[in-house]
Image (cartoon, rainbow, N blue to C red):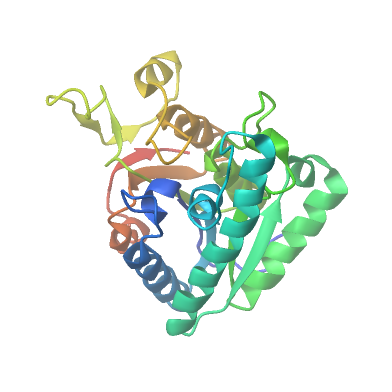
Length: 265
């Protein structure tokens, strides 16, 4: 297995559909710009940065006319179109900050087969050593299991981000969501909900607090984020869940400040 050649601090940042789109389901250009600005600047400060992104299906559905939007083929077509759109936007905005990005599309078998996994690690390391920011997404246009199957491995890319963090031996995983962190009850339903600043052990009680689905534009809820944090924590990687509309908090996170909810590795 390929080992890291550098000792730079390495972070994996995951952004979801709710961060990349507005209430009308269209691309949120300000969010793309803020993501590119913050990640480029942090990379220039000497950090290894990997971006895991969702949003391809949601963006694609707004660019093509789909007769049956719930059909598998329609979702895969939307993913194919949407992936082009979000990569175009990432490339445009990252280029504004003089930063080169690379696209990596993954299927479950890329992680499960040892030879493919090693080749993937080599690719990540080669890109990061040259200052390139890999932009990772699930290859929804060809992989039906990640869209609506019970065989889902990644789950709206929350688990994908944790898998990438483990694969690349990251120091920290940051998951941007549509909520400020992990709460003792759903803050969208209860005004007295309190944010939990730190979780040292992910057990049945934590899962029971996680609830169900996420935003109406994304498929991943808090439970998939807890599963991702659990996977990362098992490998000693701290996971932070915080609000994707405040991307610039990345500076405070990499500086060691407690933002959102920290699940300790």
